[in-house]
Length: 105
Image 1 (cartoon, one colour):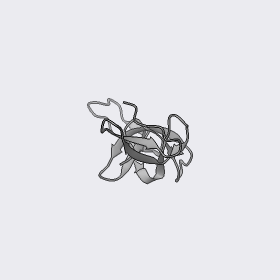
Image 2 (image 1 turned 135 degrees about the vertical axis):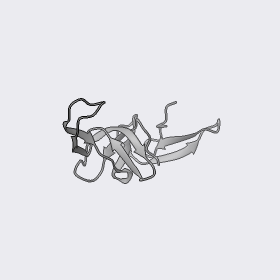
Image 3 (image 1 turned 45 degrees about the horizontal axis):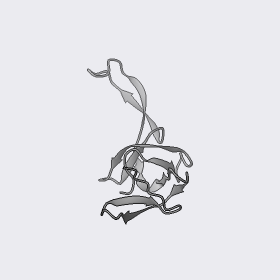
Image 4 (image 1 turned 90 degrees about the vertical axis):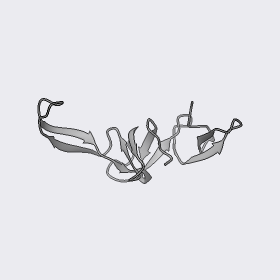
C-alpha cells in the first residue's frame, strides 16, 4: 500500500468527502485505513475492567484506501504517490505533482 501510518490524507469520495485527517492505522489485508475523525461510528460499550463505565462511544471506522489520497507536505495538495530509488539505494515515496520526497527520514 502507498499509504502509511502518520500520513495526512484527504477523502475523495463518500460521506466525508473533502475532509482531511491523519492515518491512525493501516490494514493491508483488507486494503483499508483508519483515519482520525473520518467515518466516525457510535459503538455501544459494556463496562469492563479497563473501562469502568459503559455507554455509547464514538470511534473512527476503517475505510477503503482507494477513497483517500495522500496530501503532500510541501505543495499541500492531494496527490498520487510514486516510488523512486535514491543514490544510496533507498526506495522512497514522492509526490507526482511537485516531485518532492514524501518520506522524510
